[in-house]
Image 1 (cartoon, rainbow, N blue to C red):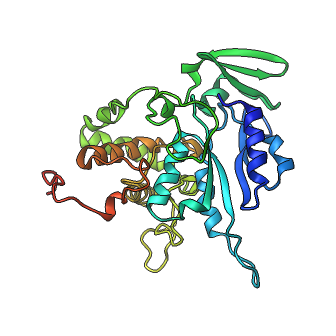
Image 2: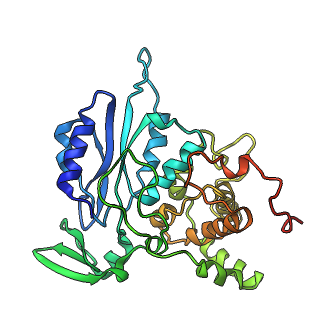
Image 3: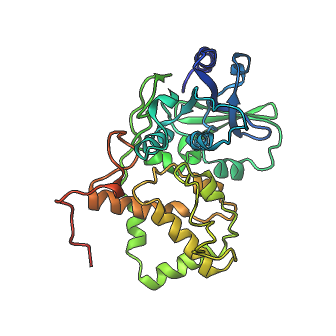
Length: 327
């Protein structure tokens, strides 16, 4: 885990640069074990920054939001760099955004943080419910140490680790200007066993499964809003002319919504799991996204968010691309 003093010292140096306008990182949350995004505007704020296993948010989402901010009349846009702290999965979002020309590489300054895994906050809060006082989580060897209410509890890492971390191929950021710790070995390769279990089901069983999941959706759009790859200025899910889907909350419109999102993320999803993390009704959205991810990798030998020089999957083709699956 990165040394917090080194992190703060580096952040202070970065935000003091004349060509950097702000730094996006993490600070302690307001209750429980949570951390929250921090927007550091000056060197005196760098002392608030942290990096712990509770830093689950994918901060790459804020980079594309920064690009959309309106400029006041009579003012020129501030073209200085935005600095951002990224884990391995977050860095893949940056890479994919740059592949798609969302912004140029020289617009950002990346502080890479090799990640030894983050917690699944749902697992933490199920194990330690109703913790309102601010607590802390640290990783010591193969155990998470949770400090709260003047006590410490140790839990095996495997019990609280986010599922996405268990199959993470890139725990060390793939793009960075400064790496704040030594590289981390990948945890395990992804065998897609969960996807294959779903593929084995009969079509009727699959529909019954997803019908129950989608029927819970309240169409809050949290999954779209948190996604670092959902940054279209004119989202098809909002469009009224023509209107592709109604705003009503029912199984038909909910299914259209989620299937549309999944298709729009095919070849773009970097498996950060933010959509599923923020869902208030616990829809397992990554099961759907991972099916597309597996198909893209097997059919086109393509993995999104791994090489800035690669063109996006759906903007190119190879004459030797497989065609045996085309009906």
